[in-house]
Amino acid sequence: MNITLSSKRKERFSLWGYTLVLWILLPFLFLHFCYQFLTKKLANSKTRIQRFGFNLSTAVPGGLLIHCVSVGEVVAAANVISAIRKTHPNIPITLTTTTVTGAKQANDLFKDTITHCYLPIDTGWMMRRLLKRAAPSQVIITEVELWPNMIHQCWRRDIPVSVINARMTDRSARTYGKISALFVPMLHKLSKICAQGERDFSNYQMLGAPTNTLVLTNNIKFEQPARPEAHHQAEDFANAFGISKRPIIVAGSTHAPEEKVLLVAHQRVLDQHPNVLLVIVPRHPQRFNDVYQICQASGLNCIRSSDGSQNGGDPDKAQVLLVDEMGKLQALYALAIIAFVGGSIADRGGHNALEPAAYEVPILMGPHRYNNPAICQVLAEKGALFEVNNAEQIYQLVTAWLTDESARKHAGQAGKRVLQENSGAVNATLKALGFS
Image (cartoon, rainbow, N blue to C red; front, side, top):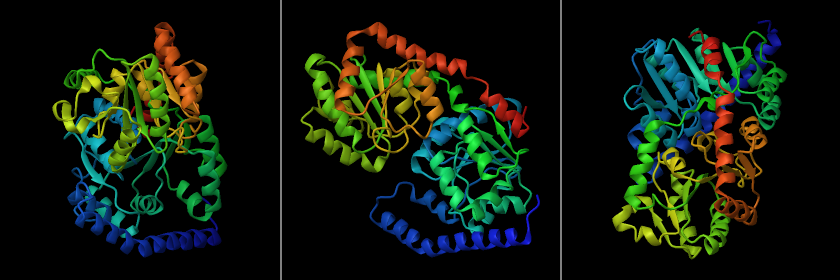
């Protein structure tokens, strides 16, 4: 890598400036942590302190350190982890996340076969503590989280860092282009960048990723199987609430104001199909109570899953079921006849549309689908995903599918075929990582 003295100075000063900002913010972040702890708003406080570099838990040295942001990245990484374990069954794996929901997903998927740790805030001191304790042979980052100090500390220790299923939206590329003195040198410290699509490959290329590092592997989320245990969990859930014979619409990973839009549409659906149940699964647990209040204000009969079938009212009369528990969404998609994928009417880029597709469920999404545009485009082109912008459009499509079962099943089967036709990304990723 040919970097001029001036470029090295720019990189050094950029990294110092970035780190200084983090250290300035650190006391406020810690005070916020203390406030949440004292007011008992913080789940898993003993492990969340890991975000400040303390009480770190890692697997035995010499294994893999795999970083995922939250739920979607953990699910994507699961495909690669399972494939690696087939050829390296005893390899120690430390999986880090930054969110509670990601931690729960990791524990639900992997149980005690991996060691979970919250990723510390990206200062050099905290990252050195993590790397010294884990001593990984390789670091793998899933999708988007490129932390300058983490990558720099790995580079200083000759620990190869790869980004798998690498995503780089046009918006992110413009942002990183404005801080190129910090971002571009970081790209030269990566061993592999496995781009999930043509857009992502092109944006990394435009930002200056070395040609020998950048490879197009396609999206490993396409190889997201329907988990057999999800069907059993779905059956248990349906039996517990007595809803196994009802048509179920699942709204997954919702954000404000999506619940209000869905409830307005559902009120109209119930006029024609009074037995339909709307199941709402908010993206973030801190919104559970707020969403319950929204459901109550709609005038519809709403029960909460956490109250249980005995204490939450009469499930037979329920028109809305709020799932205020984590780790249930995939099982609920297995119950659904129609799915709405959240973060798409709300401008959050849209969440994982392949989860319902794996269970042959037709998909509704809003216009904001920039997190996974290639996936959503393919699903839409094949007739598995349909755009809705408001309550009226949701009502029209839902009632059409409730009336025409064959059209609904055709849309669901189209999604499953998309997954089958786009396999191969996991093997390409393993090859790039040196595991094939």
